[in-house]
Length: 143
Image (cartoon, rainbow, N blue to C red; front, side, top):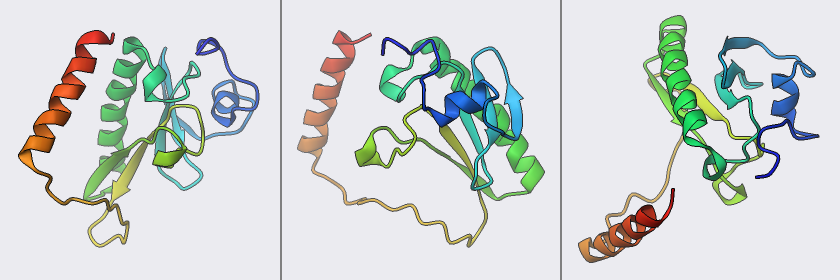
């Protein structure tokens, strides 16, 4: 993205980062801001505008994960939750609704009625091998 180093007009997360929209910040460093989502769980958001994971550079990706570990540990302690889901969606087909990369730190409790479901049917080994070769080939040709 050509504008990834600046905020993007109309982006709610850029407005939060720049202090133009109110938020409950819990963590901030050179690369990221973490704040409480409207649903009540932490979000980790890069300060630079990246639409999704496909646009992130390595320094921002590393900073996001470093912050996620720190915020997840603090969330588990503060909320006495039984577990944590790290959730992140890319593209409308995956359920992304704010097109500024963000990572949800979702506290989980035994029997909390949160449902995360996708088809877990095992596919044939030949198909898995073909997929592995295709992805590996693209890994060798991409940065």
